[in-house]
Length: 254
Length: 254
View 1 (tube, one colour):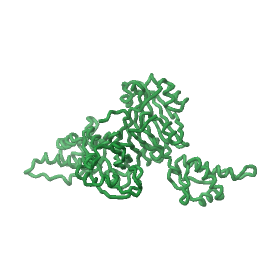
View 2 (cartoon, one colour):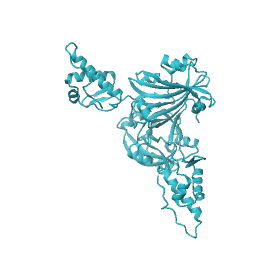
View 3 (tube, helix red, strand yellow):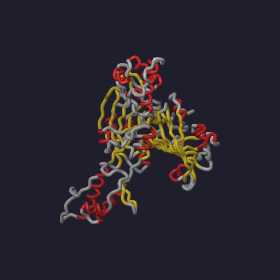
View 4 (cartoon, helix red, strand yellow):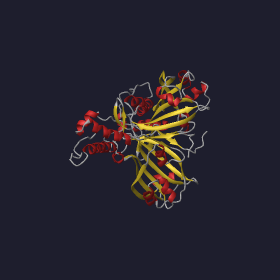
């Protein structure tokens, strides 16, 4: 946890000091939460301690905390204290498994960032994609972020030449569903998900902005088109403090 | 890894020494695997090293290893060495989620051991069971073992008075499905599974015979009877090195 007053703006006679102060404090705390220095479920120091640390009165400190509570970064448990809000998203593993839909159900939106891409031989993805091990596939490495906080890392493989253009389509649409649609796959369904869990590598933990001691849920999956042909296989690492997977065999799906 | 010759029987003129030796060595190695001192995927020391450590010739050592390979505790990769076999069971989260069926598909059988039980107020289980928080429920703490190795720990809650007698029924039948059947629930289906993962507590790690650094998959679930009434809610901790969860929305079920 990193809390210090060094980066706060100095008082100056021509600025509405009180306003700038609480905004700067809120920004500092928000940054600590997003970067994982304040972790979900962690209790903030009490008002008096924080106010002293930032060199402001309790009223100013309270304004900062209230702003963060409204944004959903913290929750105030009256009589108990203020806690970093756990971001636990329900991710439904169902016939139509869509990140955007799962997040919309929680009132959230995700940003999917393309971190790297390469064309390789199918290798470990051959079986899931139903192609020869020597066939070419497009690999995309992406990261999904909610409210500035990474929630998953995905490695996705698309058969070539059929899905040539995924890199550009994903960069343009920032959604796998929209990108596949643009490349002539109007619909796809989840054929299989296999869920396991493990500790992340140092690189994975860094990309997820989590400590290496925080396990990740690993979902290996295959998506098929309307004719049952695989259009995507992949492996998604979910930050286990932010996402739980739900399976409801009889749920009605849209 | 604990390998020593101290617990092996001494040679004696009236016993078939060679036979007793390899059996004792196999028992020792089996014990190390079951206790988790030799972990899945770990390579055994080479034949010469093991033979020297146990004070036997290579032929005797090889007999012990072959016996363990036949029992499925190790696999011999020719030209590479002998490895502790990974016990990765596919556990299907589907309408009829049954431990016994899932294991039968892998050619395995489980033993479910009742570790403790108590009658408590529904509390955290009230919502899942659709009862008042003050209603009574029967809690069972069980452990499932495959080939002598723990694979999961379960806390299961049953509404009372409807399922009065679960303790005795489970002790008798050693299967939840059979116990529920005996208590007038001919069939049940999985309404919901919620999957998360975390590191185990020291007690949980001990009960699973795993290190505390090995994450567990946590499945919180609700099972309902033919009329949709909850008959069981619970939380199962799966050893993530032994079990992976599969979800196939369109799979045909029996």
